Image 1 (cartoon, rainbow over the protein chains, first blue to last red):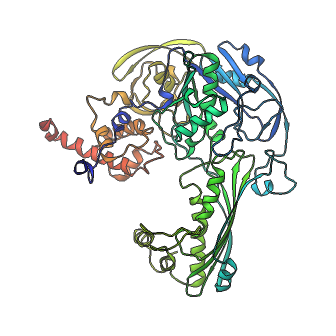
Image 2 (image 1 turned 45 degrees about the vertical axis):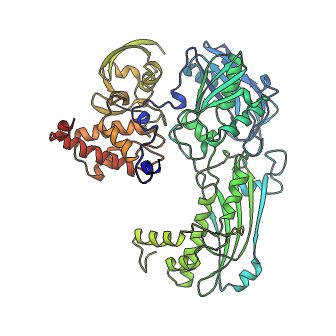
Length: 423
Length: 167
């Protein structure tokens, strides 16, 4: 077995299906008698829904049913860490970002569903739109959910931060900001659902990264046992963290139960941009101390992560970012605080690196700034501070094996053709 | 949204299809002909996932209305090869690891097909230009470029007769 495979190229099991176009992604699945869904989304990023009128849309030929929150009073909120996201926003409830769903249109064709969405009339009472997490943290800012706009606060402490800065000869203190990013997997959110009347089982073909968590979340939201939710994983057309969150799943399940017919929902790219998770933009305030000989003594960090309208993976992403505040460099004295903050932006969740890529922009910039101030070679400066076997991370994890950062730095310097005097 | 009949040659077969004035060629190919190897990534002609070869030219099928394809000859990924016969480009994509999520792969292979028909010996820059209308979010493109190089080598060696002898 080992002799046959290790050290040899093995063709991926699904590569042939993919090069011939035979691989079935969610939107490639068709059933006889299938209906198409389209979602009526929020008309304002922060507003109470005061009226929703589906009358004109329902009269359109080909519209089978329009589901609003009034039709599903038993359905509960969903969410990966905190159940704070509504399946549909009802009258008297708040829309908190432009992706919030107000109604599910079920029609005989995609075209009719799209037309019907435009005929739904909505009246809202507008509230202050909070697009800046610093505004969200102010005392007089309106609350986006029931409790504080600061959803989670995490702390980090290692050694003695005061002593660390006392030992430092040079201190660099800077603020860094990173931007919102969409993962842009080429396949947008899509899926097909079928409700089996006999067994009461809802079958969903949706590309998803957390099958079992998603199954449990759908079940709790619908008030069904997990056995009644079956997720069948089609081929995933890229995910990168964006498909960890629920997207089309609950709307498909509700429409399938309502109509007892196969249903399909495929987002447009614009809808995916507006409604589905993003990489958190971070504000990072970092203060780093170093001796004249170029050894790091202290790192103090404050992280403000804009998680948008809903928590998603935010509480985990933002504090994980903070835990990486020193990067792969030895610092004995570390102190940090990370705030995960609600705003009316599109919610942010998991994306490759889970908070660490944002932090890398800050600590690596600090390393370059400090090397410049010290007048020493930035490669050497990194190497003399880099982790080895036995080093401990900001949360005091002792590294016991597989520490390759010095080789990586050396290799990167060679590949970048770095030489003395390079920026 | 009036209905009309069109006739087109798709992967060598003549097809008569009823469509509408507002149906995109992409929807006709996917929803009516069920050739779902042609993908929709953006609906704006930016990503290349919906690429087909239409009358010998690469085309974004999301930007073409179905009636515009009346009388056209269209090749989709299903016309390039199948389980019984893989095109050398398809083989090269598998062997070099150029396929990850695979969603861009059909469009990439069609772009590569067109490139190699016009220029059997492209250099790296020419390959990059050849696939510049196709986005990939997984691979970083290098293995796709490797695949096209490998396919070009194999196709040119089979032109000289060696490949045919082996077969």
